[in-house]
Length: 162
Length: 127
Length: 93
Image (cartoon, rainbow over all chains, first blue to last red; front, side, top):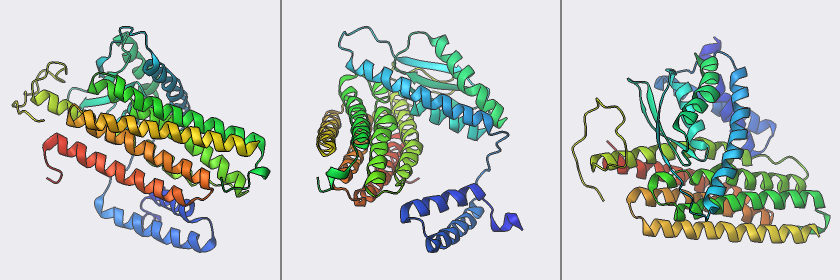
């Protein structure tokens, strides 16, 4: 019964919140927004999007805090690199990293984290070999980056999704 | 300025100014790097400067400003923040992959092959 | 006093964002390759979206917010379409 009315609760909730943010909160908009959110979720059912299986939320919250701090730090670092007039030899390059994650949602989250942090960008993923390639702006030590991504992000994603 | 600036509290004005300057200068630095960095793969890191804290700073400034002037919490700016956070990685990843594909099909030596066993695509010259 | 701070900070922010747009436009024109142009276009529309938000603060109306949202949406869609085009040479396969 619950599944028939609310096939994608998170999607419906997100749509409702978006509707209320755009139109301002009132009882009428709450009702209208709920109807639209339910109908939109129903319309999603034939598409059969893969449902992410989140095992536990705590690592994700922890990850969110780490990433927020990292983004602030790397913003400052990249801004300094742009302003650097000393023409120091800055080496940038590609790093290939073996990943053990298999879950698609977890990989997506990892890709979004890496790309939205200034200074690193996700370039390619090879699913058969389990290898991903990132581009690093200020590459001093390749192993350092591999360790950083594996210990800092991948471990938490493993805990959350697999 | 058309707003009644007289009854706008000083602390809020300072906060708004601070976030505005952080946001706009980060966006500016991102654009500047776009001009100064030499290769495409170095430049791909720079729009994120504008889309992470560049956008964040200006959205926070706008949220504080409207919440104070309308004396109620105005948070619809969060929508832009969520939207930009979700979309920027997607467009940058697509662009990086497109650039990689183009460089590889041209047989450009600056980009590494991903897996040694994948067949090399036929060279086609784009421009 | 607070009016002065607001006026000046908004003005400086707008000048910086306009400069960012101009620099991104130079990169769009210079290239050298198509992917550089698309990347610079991405930076250009983000800066113009932020510029609209500062106009909103300047005039005190929330109307600019919706315009900024639309710019963000259209900019994303066009960047994705262009990237897709660069990858395969066609948008719809």
